[in-house]
Image (cartoon, rainbow, N blue to C red; front, side, top):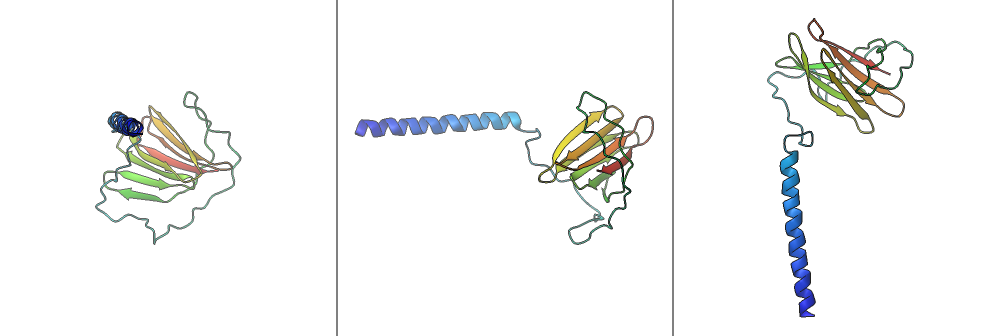
Length: 164
């Protein structure tokens, strides 16, 4: 019986050591990737939206149903008519767009834009198309879609959003 206990202890210690080494190996490879928790941007001015202040409801007009989002390799279908969304602004031209399907944060420069973050709401999926001169973020659920579309091909960045 003493020999079986010794084997069990050796097995447990070896397994624990292997699991620890594996975790450190995977952690070092994934450090700095999309798996890290998001970093907050410094905010020096009060935001326009908060948990106690709700922006006025956006007005929209009915629009025809749009086709499913295109794959990354294909050109996306033309978007439907835009709607207004509440945008919050932080220093350095960083703008946040809160949609029904999630939140998109863009850094807008004089001649280009960069995606800072895109976070889908629970139950929504997200697709991102970063291309030269434009980018698109679409959140989809079983029966709805939210899109933020930014273009800057030969002009300052322009942002439009769509709810379907």
